[in-house]
Length: 235
Image (cartoon, rainbow, N blue to C red; front, side):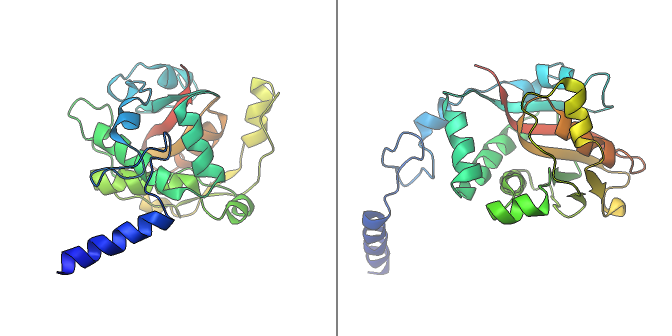
C-alpha cells in the first residue's frame, strides 16, 4: 500500500510542478532527471578531457605551468549549452550545475582521462558582492556534481576573490589581464600544499580570470594545478 501512496503523492506533485526536461520540455521518465537522455546525448562534447594538447590547454601555454586544461562542452549563442548556462547563472537553476558536474565526473573517471590523481577541486570564486546578489556561486554546484561521481573532495573556502573586476568586453588582451591581476587571494595554503589541484570554472573564454586565480594558487609550495571548465566557445 505504501508504494501506491508514494506514487500518488508524486503524481499529484508533478501536476503542479511538471517533471519536464529543462531543454526540450518533454516529460521525463522515472530514470531521467532534469535533462532527458536525448538532450544529454546531443550535447556538443569537445572530447578535450582525453586530449592533452587541446585548444583550451594551448590557450595557457607560455602563460601558466599547468598540468592539464580542458573544457567539457562547446557553447555558442544559439546552442543548448548556452541555455543551460543562462538557467544556471541567472534563473536560480542550481541543479543544472550539479547535473553538468556529474556528467563531467563520468568523463573524468574514464581510464584515458587527462585528469588523473586529483587531490582537491577548487571552484573559481565569485566576489562576495556578486555571490550575495546572485545568491550562490554556480561553480560550487559544478564541483558538487563532480565530487558526487568522482569522490574527489572540493573546497570553496581556500581561495577568495578580493576585488570585483569590471566587464572584460571590448578590452584588449593586456587590458583583460590588467583588469584581473591581483584579485584572488589564497586563504588556506596548508589545505593545498603539496597537492594536485583542479580549478573549476563554468565557461572559459579568454582565460584571463582563470589565469589570475591560477597565479595565486601556484604560489602555494609544491602544488600541481590543472584547469577544467564546463564549456568553451565553439560549434
